[in-house]
Structure formats: C-alpha cells, structure tokens
Length: 155
Image (cartoon, rainbow, N blue to C red; front, side):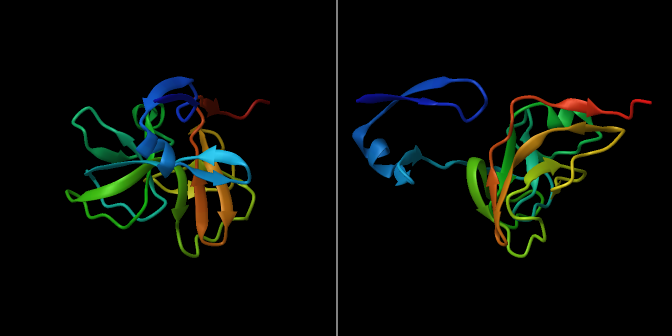
C-alpha cells in the first residue's frame, strides 16, 4: 500500500490506498487528481452544478449564502439533476458538467441562494464562500475552500 496526502477539505487528510485505488487516480498535466463522490439522498431538487451541504440525517440539502448553517460545513456539488427525496451523485471535489452555465471561464465561483453558484463575489449581507472555478462553457471545477466570511459594506 502507498500513502498519499489529500487536501480536498482544506485540511491535510492522510489515507492509505490500495493499488487498485491508486490505479484509479488519473495523471493530469503531471499532477495526480482524483474525483471523490458521494451517492446519497437529496433533501431538495438539485440541478447539475448546484451546491448542498451534508446534513446530520445523511441527506444533502441546498446551501444558501444567507443561512450560516447551510454554508459553513462540508459542501458537495450535484453532478446530475436529482429530484427531492431521490438518490443522486454529488462530488466533494472535481469537475462537474453543467451545460451552458453562462459563467465566465476562469472565474472563481461562489455559493449564492438555493444552491446556485455565481462568478460574482457575494455582497452585503451574505456569507461569502468560494467553491471552485469555471473550467469551460460547460464545466465547473468544484473545490470548496475551507473558510468563509461575512460580506458587508464598510463606509
């Protein structure tokens, strides 16, 4: 077995991988990457690219930058359209196809209301948490930062 350091959640997590797991890791531009996903029940309806938080019940609920309890914990992004109450796939970190999202390529993305993301940094009053970047016209790269702050106007 080999050990690798994985910093998906902003903290260095050490995990022991089997050779099969190592073989699943793809080399991209000389760097090792690995998508990490979760299949669980969605408490709300999600579209691909919507952001949610892992609730205590084990379900995923839409994140909202006006509600601290929904944005400050472990976030995931839907990889598909999921009906409320149905099981679906979410990614902890990695690319997500969100066809024709309309965001600016190369820009950071931020959580807004009802699980949506935007390439404009939130304004007062909101909790600002960057969750990734726009890879191309149809792809978001989800990589939530481990910190957030309250956006407020200072006069």
